[in-house]
Amino acid sequence: MAAARKLTQGTEEYVEAIWRVAESGEATIKDLARHLGVAPPSVTGMMKRLASMGLVKYSPYGKVSLSAKGRRLAAAVIRRHRLSERMLTDMLGLPWEKAHEEACRFEHLITGEVEERVAERLGEIDTCPHGHPIDISAADKSIPLTEAKPSSRARVAAVGDESPEVLQYLSKVGIVPGARLKVVGQEPVADGPMLLEVAGKPRALGRQTAEKIRIILESEAKAR
Ligand SMILES: [Zn+2]
Ligand SMILES: [Zn+2]
Image (cartoon, rainbow, N blue to C red; front, side, top):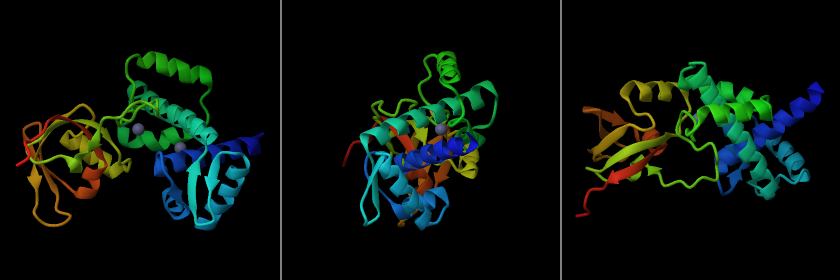
């Protein structure tokens, strides 16, 4: 029983990781290994197993993608993950930088009944605390912050970086889903930070972090 559960958890964790790394496209064994913090050969071994279960397609060149069955499993795991995050932050008051890691345990354990209770309690809320849709097939109109031109105004849709340090910083400066910001400009050097105005205060954000912040444009600067 414990072994079976462990196997299920491993399968779910891998399918979730492939979805997170590849979204709709392909992931490489190397990227997956990095994402999961394991050695590439263990990823390859697991891919063989997942392929025999009909969950993934993979090529000997190291490219992996989810099958339709794999995508359905990923959608179920991600839904449980994001509902668990909400349960942890909204109902138990856990800070959002801790929610992701904790939810990675809950997502394999919560039953359908608890899952539906949480969804019911959330009512209209249809994203995780980081702004990602609980239903992964929901339409996404957001763009990366780095694509916004200077003088654009936007609303933060989601923050993609789940590293606790980054999340802690973002909530400190008010870059959270729903917050409004203005793009002031960008330092004229390659990889220079993006200059923003958030709640009336100037803020600078490194490009790597800015790339992972999704926004909905409210007004775009006219192209010159
Ligand atoms: Zn997980
Ligand atoms: Zn989240």
